[in-house]
Every structure is written in C-alpha cells, then in structure tokens.
Image (cartoon, rainbow, N blue to C red):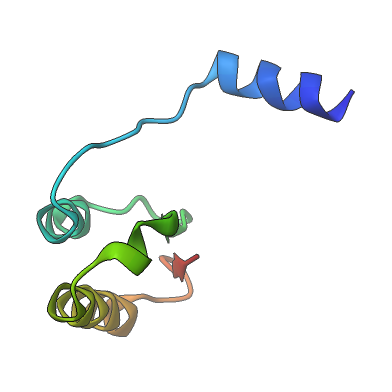
Length: 79
C-alpha cells in the first residue's frame, strides 16, 4: 500500500531530474527567487563521494553562503 501511494504521488507530480555540472546547477538554483513560506531543499545522491575534493569544497562554500542568507521565512535544508 505504501509503495502504491508513493508511485501514485510521483506519477501525479514527477520530480525534475537535472543532468548538469553541480556547481553551475547550484549557482542557478540560488539565483532563483524563493517563494516566502517555502523551504529551499538541496538533496544529492551518492554522487558526492565521486566529486573531487576541490569541487566538494566549492559546493560547501556555496551552501554555507546560502545558509547565511536563509531566514525563518525562507529556510534552507541540505539533505
């Protein structure tokens, strides 16, 4: 029953899957206005372990800057 509900949810509103350079993609997401009352969620899969250390450091800096700009009305979640 839970799997059927999950499949139905995704079928009704499929997620956007982006195939892009992580730094460029993240830069572009943070340029988009965040609607008040919404949570900006950044989630990544196992790709993190495949990144070069320098790329990870750059992405961590981008996330830290975004976290510093986050507010209670427009929070940021990094999963």
